[in-house]
Structure formats: C-alpha cells, structure tokens
Amino acid sequence: MIKVLIYEDNPQLREGLTMLIDGSDGFNVVASYKNCNNIISELKTWKPDVILMDIDMSGVNGLEGLKRIREVDQETKVLMLTVFDDNKNVFEALKNGANGYLLKKTPPAKLLEYIGDVASGGAPMTSSIATQVLKMFSELPHQTNNEYNLSDRERQVLQFLVNGYSYKMIANDMFIAIDTVRSHIKKIYEKLHVNSKSEAVAKAFKDRLL
Amino acid sequence: MIKVLIYEDNPQLREGLTMLIDGSDGFNVVASYKNCNNIISELKTWKPDVILMDIDMSGVNGLEGLKRIREVDQETKVLMLTVFDDNKNVFEALKNGANGYLLKKTPPAKLLEYIGDVASGGAPMTSSIATQVLKMFSELPHQTNNEYNLSDRERQVLQFLVNGYSYKMIANDMFIAIDTVRSHIKKIYEKLHVNSKSEAVAKAFKDRLL
DNA sequence: GTGATTTTCACATATTTATGTGTATTTTTT
DNA sequence: AAAAAATACACATAAATATGTGAAAATCAC
Image (tube, rainbow over all chains, first blue to last red; front, side, top):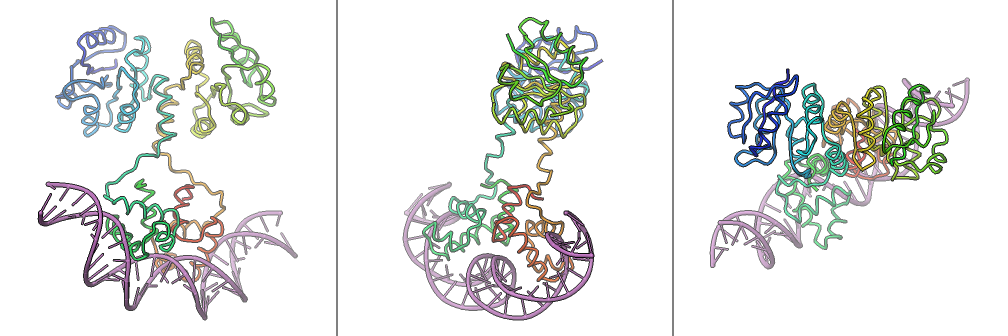
C-alpha cells in the first residue's frame, strides 16, 4: 500500500486527485493540504511514501516545500505537478531533489502508474518534460557565477588569463599599462583567495566564473 | 500514419514487434532488418518517421547504426531498444542523438504509446532509464579523456598544476628533481599544443583531461 | 556630495616559468 | 631483439610572474 500525501492549491483538483488515488487499489491518500505552510510537521505525522506536490500554490509553494523536505529527509519521494512545463521550475525542482515531474494534464491512469514508478525508485516524467531536461543538460553550462564580486574589468582580465594570454598581451589588447594589468590581477587573486595564475584559471572553471 | 522501420537481431522478437506495431491503428511497419549493415540505403528507401533500433546486434550494431544515421539525417526519430539498462550504452546513445531509450520488457501498449511520443517530438524513456540519465548527468564530469595520450606521470604532474602547485612543490611531492618536473611539463605542453601553465590548466578543464 | 570602490599607472625585486640542449635508465611496443 | 616511449636528471638563460608600496583620477552607491 503506497501512502500518498497531496499538496494542491485548487480545491476541486485536490478533491479529484484524492478520490482518484484513494479509490485505486494499492494507494492510500493519508491527507491533503492547500499549501506547504506546515509541511515538516505534516511529513512527520503522516510519513507518506510519495508526496504529490503542486508547484504553484499561495502561501509556501511547492519548490519551497520541496526544499524544506530535503533539509530533513532524503527518503520520501516527491513528485512535482505543474500546469506548464516551464523550464526554470523543472530545473529548480530537479536540482532540489524532486523525484519526478509531471504535467497536470497527465491522464489519471498514467498518473497512478507514475506514482507507482516513483515509489519503487524510478524517476517518472512525461515525455515533454524529459525532452526539456535533456535539452537543458545539453545546453547547460552557461550561467555565470559571481559570488566573488569580481568587477567587470577584473572579469575581463581573468578571461584573458583563462585564454592563456601573458600580462604583456593583455595590456596590449586592453590598451592599458602592464602595471595596471598587474594590479588587476593582484586584486583578482585577493578576491579568489589564490596566489597564482593557474589557481585563478582553475577556479574560473571550477566555479564557472566566466 | 507513423512509418516505422525496425532493426532487431532476434527473428522472433522482430516478427512480434512487426505484428504488434503494424497491426495497430496509426502505425505502419515499412520494413525490418536483422542488422544495420545497409542502414543508410534502407533509410533512403523507406523514409520512416521512427526507427526502432536494437542495441545488441551482430554485424553493424545499433549504436553504430545510430551514428551512421546522424551523419546524414537529424530528422528521423530513433528509439533505442535494449535488454539491459546498462549505463554506458544509454549515455553513448543519447550523446549520439537517440530520441529515446526503452527496455525490451516495456509492455506492448506502452511501446506503442512511446513510438507515438517520439514521433511527435518527445523523448520517451522508461522510468528506470530516466533515473539513470538523471544520475549520470548529475555525476557526470567524471570520465577522463585521453586523446592527447598523456602518460601516467604526465597526468600526475598536470593534476598538480591544476591544483596550483609550483614546480618546486611538485618535485617535492613526487620525490623527483625539479628538472624532471620541467621535462615532464615540457612534454605536456607539446602534447597539448600549448606553451604556458595556465593554458595547460584551462585545457585540462575544457577537455576534461583529469 | 562624499565616502567607497574601481580603474589606472609607476618602480623595484625575488621567484617562477619557459626553452634549449644533452644524457642515461627503464618500460613498453612491435 | 630492436625501436620507441617514458622517466629521470643537469645546466643555462631569457622571459614572465608574484609581491610590495604608493598614488591619482574616475565611477558608484548611499
């Protein structure tokens, strides 16, 4: 018997899902809520096998709920539900440890099938979602990180370093004195907590700084 | 009407698949073969919408067949079929532009559904496969590339460079003379076609050399 | 508008790197 | 067994890098 906990904003859909799932052999809906405001205590109370989680809810939404769950529990399977297959949410959800991602228009029979899948360790997603996921991963490594607060000029210089330019070449290409290049680089080292060109270059790759 | 072309080693399964698919509304099996030896001319002859491709076949196998197709055609959908969901093949297939990946034990009804999915642009996969794909991508950057034929010792030295070690520190840690470190590094530069430490480090990341 | 940051430049110097040329074992490949 | 790589070491030198100290103008943020 798979214990299911439902989070869904819309009362009609919430009722519908509960009826559908609870009325099916092998499934048991232990409770359903309209947002994730008290998700941790609810999780502890019901100890569900699978959580069906709507993304868009007023109050604490599904992504936030997922995060809260994963802070304390890696075991419970979480199946995200959404109306739109919008890129950003899919990615956020998967990053935060969602076990699957379904569109609300998924037919009832398949929904049950997917809940079964996820309960037994699978990662179900509708094929349109799967397409997106693959596309995202293939296009991925583009989104720059700037937790080190490099300035524009510093990022430019770092880019040159990564491309293997010497100080002299950088000075030439940027139309500044070599001593200026030096001072930028000194600042970069400070900010990245390194003290050599290759460490800076390595860090640029590791932390996707460019 | 979705035109399907089948490549499958096992005569019984080939017959079975053909019967199943051809006998279903909306599907038409245009031909089926026991290997990919002549896949390009067969592709041109039949112009299928979807190719159902077994991975393990004697003669030209499915992966090789997929590669040949993608050299000349990006449009035709290719659904890979396999008995085992072994990691390596899944990855290879997806890298080479497979549109989906199914286990042979997929029930007939779902198989048809998946063929429909892929024909309309989806990327169907069984949930066990999807799980693997996600896991692979998340674990990914681990599988070293050695097209530059770095020797063991050279790779070690490069690793130290990436970690920001100076020649002196490398010599110390590897219990060799600093001149030996130099000579290794010179060799590394030759092989990577670079001439500075940072270029070598950058290349190590770009080409996932370590 | 003023204090903070960024960008620019200068001078000095110790250390590190890049390159060349050569040699001698050992290991691997053919 | 011979040829080819890989590994190890030495000496020399020009170029590049790291580091320090200092300072002025421009730009940004509150």
